[in-house]
Image 1 (tube, rainbow, N blue to C red):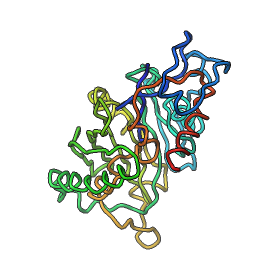
Image 2 (tube, one colour):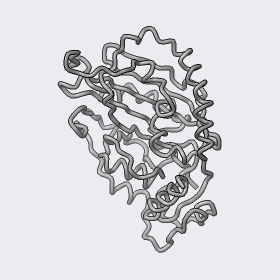
Image 3 (cartoon, rainbow, N blue to C red):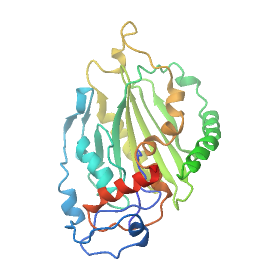
Image 4 (cartoon, rainbow, N blue to C red):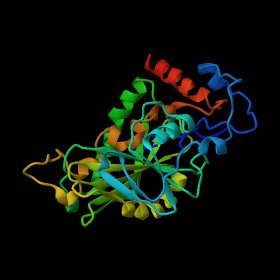
Length: 310
């Protein structure tokens, strides 16, 4: 029985339990899964290794879709395309379909299907050029208090809608901003109502000419030290391309974002939960279960989320 990866959720790796790729030995059916949708036992099965082999691992210098940024990967990481990223998030990590990203960075030393597997999901938000004039003025302890206060209303609405509340417990890693490179990172420790473990939401941001590159590490709190060790490497090899860098901003022609660094870190539930708000925060409400058959997973979650909406 595997752990549900709450991702997005940036998720987003493992506050609760997740349906994993079918093991080579058949597992017994679990009542919670059967209660939602029948699983076709005659579906062809794949081992984790066979399924992972269908994902194309890309190495070296990678230009992200749209050409706005690039990755200069060393041998410790590989890149998955947006299509392969969606497959990993939906088929393996149990998130609903339709997740749009710029791809994903995955460490080579651990399988993304392992209990300690993790990855960094990439997206881009073009709200405009974010001024860092407030960088030295932000009191992050006070900001944390404000963010916690916002939890009460957010969680009331989520619970009324039938979803688990998500409480911000504190900084797992306080925000840090490098004004020379215009790169920032921070981490939150989150607790879902029905989760047995706390969740790590590790956020990396690279500011650009007309927006911000968002990298969300999807992991468990137990993986905090690993993510902290790897973050400097990820920051170093992720950069905007020429013409899209922070220094390329032209105040005469380019849009200025209506918020600064403090709002980038805080925001509402979408910012607080990072990727979780986009890809499967509802999964945090469910207990452990097993899904039999790789090809049944997508249909199962499609029916489940339609039922939740109804």
